[in-house]
Length: 356
Ligand SMILES: *[C@@H]1O[C@H](CO)[C@@H](O)[C@H](O)[C@H]1NC(C)=O
Ligand SMILES: *[C@@H]1O[C@H](CO)[C@@H](O)[C@H](O)[C@H]1NC(C)=O
Ligand SMILES: [Ca+2]
Ligand SMILES: [Ca+2]
Ligand SMILES: [Ca+2]
Ligand SMILES: [Ca+2]
Image (cartoon, rainbow, N blue to C red; front, side, top):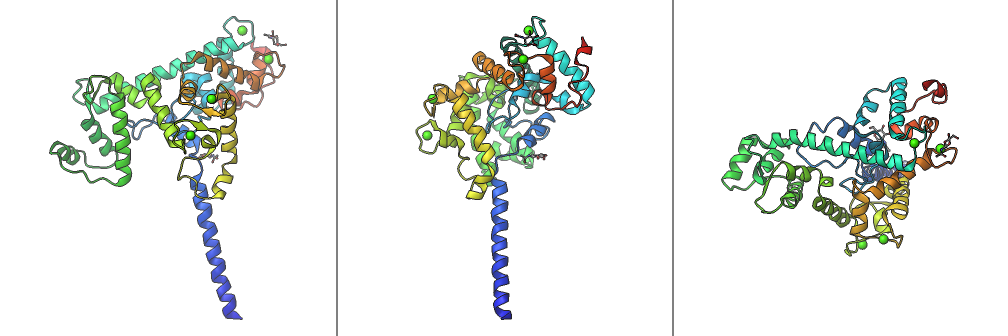
């Protein structure tokens, strides 16, 4: 009897262990936590600032194919985004939001129309562009220490490996002497994808040298048509299961291959799937034929597309337009402050009219 019981205990343990493993795998299989990405980015990418970021402010999709959850806040706040995060005093934030409202309301009729919001979104997107240009200036200096305005692939490769903990001098020496570099498989894979990207960012003549502008498009594909196309190609490659270079809805809502190993993992991601399905059907698949082509995805991702900006403006208005007049009044924006700015103000309804 006691032996039988002992055997059962072992079985139970095994079952518990298996369940434990499944849960761990399931959790790891979840799409990257966007707020982790975001805080990393807001803090200015201190580590690895010479690597292309996964998250691009003001671009609807991240490099790894995830939807940018903060997109509407990014294009509403522009470079002031970080201010709303750091200083969380509701009263100050409320005041700032009121200021923003009066700027968006271009014709000063105390009501924000879709056209006004579209114009604002384009302005704020431009701000993110300018921020990237500024940041790139700093990053470019870091990879171009002799300051001749050009960086070779080998120079960059040394800096990249140094950022991964390799000895910079040793690596530089080895590359100079054409010796083999011993790097682990994961680093090797990253190197190869960086190299492809490097060549892609290198405008003719193909001399493997990047100037500051080319380096900007290397880090920020949204700044060049060619690199944006390249980014779209990579995303489609990662999601496309039958190799026809376009995406069906089911390809789009499946996690990239190898990230989900079991049904439990998939179930946890129901919300993720729901959001993607909606985005696919309502926005990305512009002609609604059930297929997303490279061209459709490229249109969707292009931050300078005015039609997208108008669409975004209409969506934002629809979220907060309580009196259904297709425009936003101050009360509506304050009430939905969390949606627009990411921070909540308790007393939104009180004293709104005092501000005027
Ligand atoms: C993402 O991470 C943040 C901070 O680590 C946490 O507060 C939040 O709950 C996480 N969100 C999800 C969906 O896991
Ligand atoms: C929207 O409604 C508000 C409040 O009723 C009004 O003051 C405003 O003029 C309206 N705007 C438009 C464009 O209809
Ligand atoms: Ca107006
Ligand atoms: Ca396909
Ligand atoms: Ca289509
Ligand atoms: Ca309204």
